[in-house]
Length: 549
Image (cartoon, rainbow, N blue to C red; front, side, top):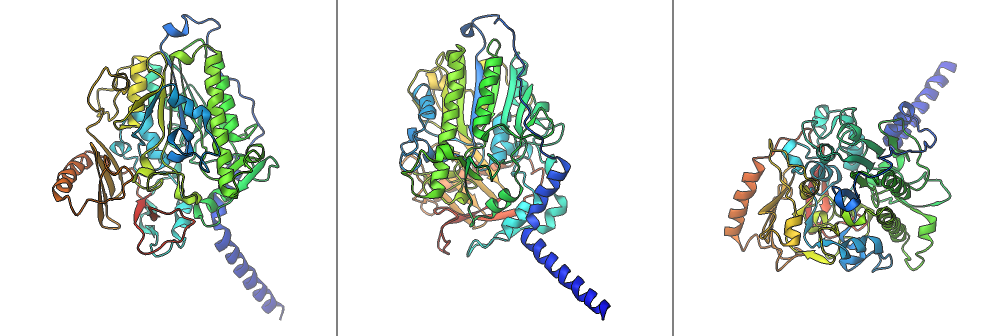
């Protein structure tokens, strides 16, 4: 009798354990990471100091370069683009000032429609597909969880047969054979600093401190908490309709590393922490040329804001939108802090400041207007996914209030910074970026680019002058838009312009053949509804694409 009871008890425990595992299995990556690499108390950061006295006044030195990258910032999230969060309820005065005091690019394009490949393009000046960095590094458990989500009539596709071909996450990186802009600027005597989100490799050889940056402070993975979830100073918004949110809240730490150190807690809200440390780095290096890459994770999920910012926005009634708006407020505040530090040190006139976002706003936060007036989202090649805020400020070279209307791209950041520093571009490889300053000042005429190109798996896009072609395998469809007359991509001309389709397909195929094979496979193909965020119900007649990752 006792043995029977023991067997029944064991079965009950096993069933209960299995039920718990099925419900919470995606917590395992974060638990294992916490065991292997526990988070230490805050480490005060002291930045390396440059010379006590400058060798020459700022105007007679090579220009400093400050690259500020937002994460998943929607085109409509900043007020200079004619909108802003909640119809202008969150004015972005400091970001707007970069446009007013420099050049605003009306057609600024991201290197990709998702985080990491876009960053790879920025860092190398090349299409990320040229060296196989085609898909955003993500844990297998993350992609498996997304594949289990019921999106509606269009189901995710998980390629379990490819799991064994997936390298360890840390090894999904920009190859060390690629030259980063930090490495190039170091050849011209620049002190190089990285802060924030890396997402381009986590091994010893591929961390930012081994890819050209003298000093680093941030996190290697694709996302981070902004504060601990139970901090009384934070206001959280959890999207229960989103599997991405579910995974991030279960696994993300609130932690940074310094030059590859053990993880430790930041001393304040992440956006303020990165901004304040950038100010300290500017102060420490005021007497020598420097390159600072300030890669904020704002406003990427998880949505967390300071209560002090949240409380300033009572006019926004929707809680999620209010948290998001408060995050934008913090981002703008810290852009202002950086610009104030440059001015206080007498550096702002001869510093090239570049501001952009890695891609457009994401559908999975459930807010419908973040990319307005454009269709599409992050993880689509519609304008909402790749047409991003893009500004440069350099008073010594660029006249205030300049507007440039021809397409430029993230790949141009490399070439533009290199030219400013007097560094020749690598001559042993195809470089896709160009120095845009002569085009902005009028010294060069014509267009910086004949074509721009994007690819994620079987979904490919070509921008050729005013014409834009998107080619998709799932669904089997082409979209052709004349952006001169239809910049918001509502009138698909694919069926009425067969000659243009043929011409552009030939160009697209020729560029496509020049690209490398992906360094790792795409495990997940997920449906993205073009016109509605994830919080809206999906209908069979909605336009959609499948995104490979």
